[in-house]
Picture 1: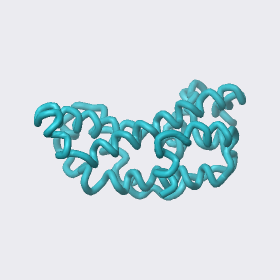
Picture 2 (picture 1 turned 90 degrees about the vertical axis):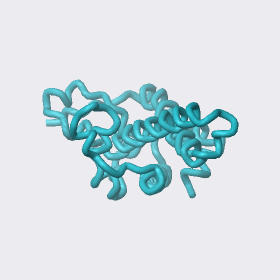
Picture 3 (picture 1 turned 135 degrees about the horizontal axis):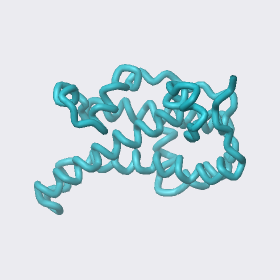
Length: 176
């Protein structure tokens, strides 16, 4: 029995802006993180640390959100009763034959990313190693690969995606 939500074309079109917003936030936070240490002169050390921390958390949040969009994972993990209520926006709503590309970082870090992001637990305190210098590049590449595949699959509302992605170098970054 099919429990998955099927959006209307208007809902799909309306969601395009939100999908791209998530991507733009990931891109902008990644840019800020790359400039760590170069903002101290303008902001001061305390403020720079705060900006870095906010950008770090923002990156992880939007990474997880986009992973869920591309993998359809949260919906697939729900019980049939919960799935009836699930109206997650997912890539397969735009490309019916959608299959997410391999995402090895996500596969290895799925549980840890969620703990680091949203839970103050003893398990979180024991998690070592989510490091912007070594992990955010591969995390970004996973999202970029998924976007390349997605755009190459000619999604529903393709022109709307192209229009939204055209601003501020985002599309160029996605297609690197």
